Length: 237
Image (cartoon, rainbow, N blue to C red):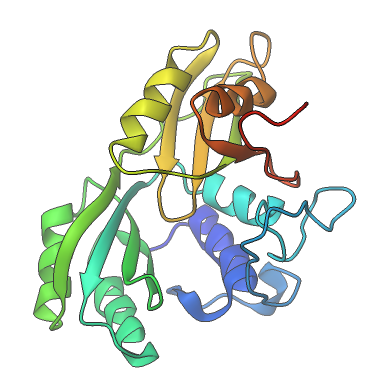
């Protein structure tokens, strides 16, 4: 079953991304405000002047970043799924996954041919999740990511999100997380390949999100903090 925190996070994602997400139990309208929109793939900055929420209308939406950060304590499995040809297939996968014990949130994206599952590793496993999808009549064409949960934040420490773009072939997770984890003041990081976000736990007395963004740029990736315009390597600061 969904915890209250994960339910609130999912409702926010539901408002930002429309019908891609499902939840059990259903949330009330009071849980979140704002209308559903489609995320832009442009590098434009957030339209919200206070960076509180752009309604999902930009590529570095603060609201979506907060929602994903709120699920950092869950394991994430990202799969390439074959056989989805219509919206009904995505809904069938979501519904089929939601009945599994330990599955907190499921996302099926028809256009990308992907499924994203937040789950409790003490109650279920990637093998069980993949088996369920195959029993529904679909194929597993590959594992894109299997992300371990971040531990509970240390007292006085903070968690941030950095949007990442221009991912390339190869092990982006090891390259990015290895470099960021080596920075002074960083407790740990996780790369979510469904949402193109790097989550970082850190000591604000020793470092800050701008340092992580600059590290990504030095590695050759494009990056941006929530609400910012995406920056590209070599651009004049």
